[in-house]
Length: 178
Image 1 (cartoon, helix red, strand yellow):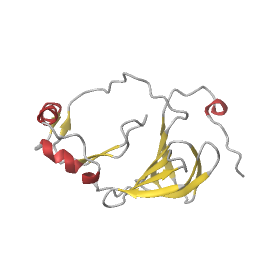
Image 2: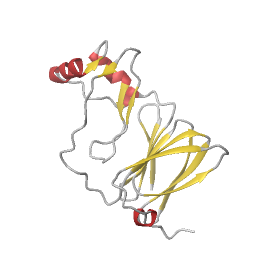
Image 3: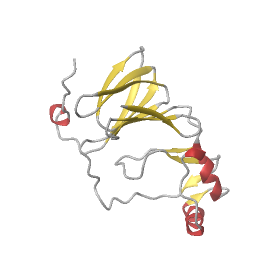
């Protein structure tokens, strides 16, 4: 199992299985490391697109105010935005030309208050790590996981790939862990 902090400030942490599969990705609530995860602002056409699609004072500031923290091929994308007041994103939607093919449905857990311990597991029931998330932290879970609410008043928001299969039992594969 591999646990690795990525980016210059170590505010993003990857958890990988022995074979390199991504099992979880933790983004700390105090994230400020935009320069380590820059968006695509390399060519004249990309700068022109930002000028047309966004109302920002300087399109090159995207490198310091927008972070793409997930790999492009993942079925859930995590982007952190911290633009200046008055910046706007013009109305749009995101195309879905191809349904992602993954052996599991990925999900994101966001801690709104309190603290929770997230256990990360491979599909084969190997324990990868335990991660404590606190207010404003989020974690991307790609395979198995457990959740323990460790403080009173803990509130979590769960976002996962759909569609929901109709029942809780049909939605899960329980891992043989005590």
